[in-house]
Image (cartoon, rainbow, N blue to C red; front, top):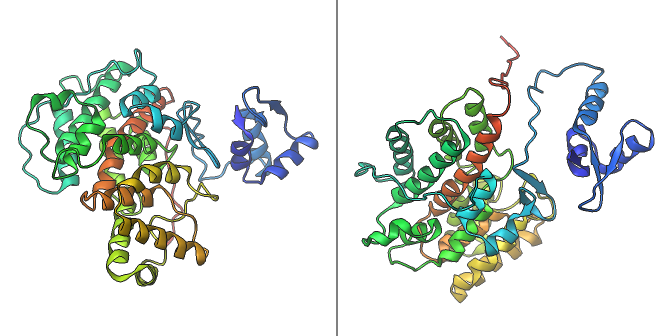
Length: 382
């Protein structure tokens, strides 16, 4: 069943138009017992969409993707298996949220330690993460086991390996058994404990999944041809590397650095001249503001110095005064990284570790669909 907003989006109409269809008898609505509003049958919505096209199948409509992993809500933000991500960020660990997305039993009972991969020959953080994922798959002798428990195991060890690849952590052996957020926080700063693990954990939870983002689609395409979990995760990691996806928080970080040095007005003007848009502002889904922004900023702000907090507020206020779209989670993630002395690419690092949870959940879901269902066709032009 689809919510009112989802049904309207599938049909490409506004909500009032959707209810006009109901009043005209073109579509049947059902009462939602768990919330205000209505539910609509997916098959009915798809049939109406086909009739609106005159019964023609459009060449770009290749597959209908139905998911029970994450729902995006305009006001509430992402809902993981029906639970608000912003609520989970305040009370659950990243591991617990990952197990919730994967629907594994017992929740949180898996081994989240990284395998021994040897010494990485690379220096750049994201290259080290790619290397770690390749080596993680190469060291799994049954990497082609696609049963849900095996996929969850592969995801756990992959996430842990990505964390270990970030940089050297504490030398004591207890680090291997520490929560993922604590391990990652220790590696993102020169001094152990400089960034509260609670803030990193909240960022991991809030970024764990976001429905059919481009990197998630890459994972699902890989899953549709039955690539093993490590290769599918690598497809997601490769897509995440783009500056308009996983790299967006680094651009926002650089904006804050320039604003601190040259002033907010000059920084925003220079970025708009060069990029035509402000990184960390606006979102294709959340027109009234990204709910993840406020949740993460509440944890990041107390970690900023007074002067840094002033710069951040000036950037946000100046953008608002010029009708720039509202800030999104990339700006909050950038503020957390910038204000605590993390490297500029820390946002993408956190993003990559977090999204392993969502990618694995969508991978598992795609395995229940018919194989090779994604097949694009080109329009040939000389």
